Amino acid sequence: MRSVRRRRLTRSRRLVLLCDVSGSMEPYARAYLQLLLGGVVGAHAEAFVFATRLTWITRALAHRQPDVALNSAGRAAPDWSGGTRLGESLLAFNDLHGRRGLARGAVVVILSDGWDRGEPDLAAREMERLHRLAHRIVWVNPRKARPGYEPLTVGMAAALPHVDRFLAGHSLAAFEEVLAAING
Image 1 (cartoon, helix red, strand yellow):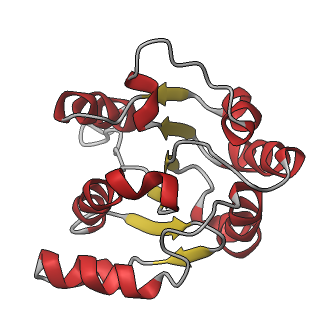
Image 2: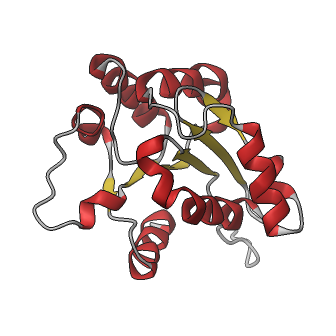
Image 3: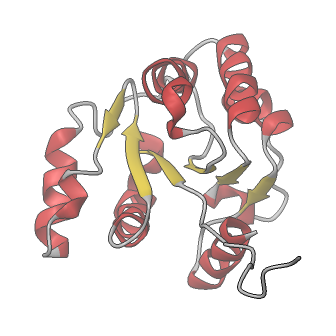
């Protein structure tokens, strides 16, 4: 006997957004924070920013007025426009949030140029850990759109083998491609 009402339920995957707010990403940080704000409001999503350390900003972005939310997120990150410690930030995410289920089966979007002052081995190891937990990792690098770009920076070269989609995030059309990658 088969139930006629039985049908497959579809459930959206959790979205985890990690945004680099270091000095090299300053020209893109506000636009990417707008993306984070849009991703967090009304969705099953979590947002983090990082430079030299990881900062959870989901609650800061929950404010109804976008300018207030973005200002609150900026105040929450004490290392804004500092250097980048990609490996250490990923280690903090994996240890504090990823292993506890936040990244398990999620679509993880990393918005970063991959410039890193930390250890490349640590970044590679933590990206591998994250890749085992996540359903898909989408890396958005605004510098990828430049003619002749090659991912030669230490952090980008260490992370790229563990990335499912590597996209440019330099324009509105590129953001549409990012959204398509998130939706799978």
